[in-house]
Amino acid sequence: MILKEDLQAAVEGQRKSLSKIKGLTQREALAKFSPASTHIEVIAGVRRSGKSTLMRQLIEETTTDFAYLNFEDPRIFDFEIGDFAKLDELFGEEVSTYFFDEIQNVKGWEVFVRQLHDRGRKVFITGSNASLLSSELGTKLTGRHLSHEILPFSYSEFLAYCNLENSNENFLDYLISGGFPEYLRDRNPEVLQNLLKDIVFRDIAIRHGIKNTQTLMEITLFLIANVGKTTSFNSLRKTFNVGSPSTVSDYLAWLQDSYLLFFLPKFSWSQKSISKNAKKVYCVDTGFAKANSLSFSKDSGRLLENLVYIILRKKRMDLFYFKEKGECDFVAFENKQCKWLIQVTERVHADNKKRELDGLTEAMSFFEKEEGFILTLDQEDKLIIEGKTIHLVSVRGFIENFLTGDS
Image (tube, rainbow, N blue to C red; front, side, top):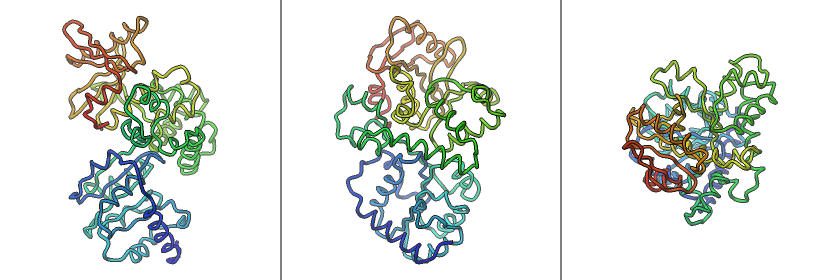
């Protein structure tokens, strides 16, 4: 329970801080919000990815009669559901638009948000835990909300933030450095290493009462070091001597809920097979992966594959990997139709050409596609094999020419 005067001090202090923030890099996601929408807008994503910045940009586009509160303010650490009545009183009746940061920290928050929505108010909320948001959204707020996933900077946002020109050299810098704004300010890897600790220990271990935090961290670091590779509950259980596959399953679910890691399923027409087969692991950001692992010192190919996963994820496509005799890195579905088949490698050369082509052409035959892609660091070419076209394209070229700027 919060004293009303403490709550008022937090509200006023945060509003003053908002007014001082200038010169923010425009987020591409801003264009996806419709001013006419009456839905509750949910902005979800990993910590420090720019959710609050996006919210501030949305505030700038609204009228002055808005209310804002960040629930991670230590002054309101003990905020409870009963305090929403005090908050409502403080904000007053003239407010038309509400902005709440990290509201999932308050148990029962969805009741207050629904009340605001029922009163005809516009509400924006951010959160960094998928389950805590989705469970409430799926019950009390069904049909009343729109979800937006915010990830670290895209390549174009990276260029704008760092005031750089589009070039091969700067794209390589982006691949290695990633898109966390706080890291890009001074390139200190401790920023990303501390972020990992915050997520694993504070957001996962403390929240879920995990006592064996060392094993949780070891599994997390192992997965980060092995992006682009397949993993399973049983293999991780044996490697780290964990008691049961269900414990590992919980760990991975919580890591995914925090938007730190993502798990790509193997394609199958059977939903049961999809759930049972080993999944490939990817990290939320290539710079984050590199700062927390030594495995990429001589292997930028897996970083490139990780980046392609993030690019495709931002398109909100249904993604799988394909594996029969060979393997194709990404099968991308849009509106239940296979749109893209994509192989990723740093460079096609004599040693890997057959493997890359065989996996892709097998997937093309399976899905009856006439075109496929091999995305590389800097190669551009076109191959015709048995009447089918394979585009050899740099990832930068793919962003520019095939994603129409929506990366």
